[in-house]
Length: 84
Image (cartoon, rainbow, N blue to C red):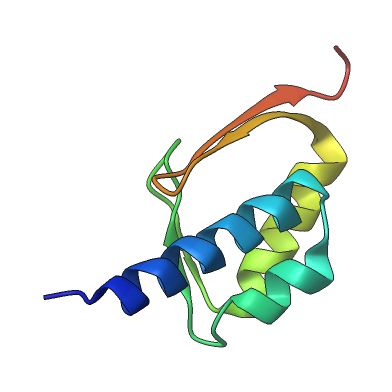
């Protein structure tokens, strides 16, 4: 069972990560991610293992797209091609 304090800590961390994404702040993203973090991409289920791999992927993503919308603790990130 998750305590209220743990739930709040998770929500605050999620909010910090969302802000870092919205600001394309790779340093802040890296500070939040664990060195062994694993991300399963929503678009193609690609697996990105480790902080360095994720930072590189976000760097490419930020260069190619414009952030349009970031929401809530459950997380939804909408990105549009930079050409729009």
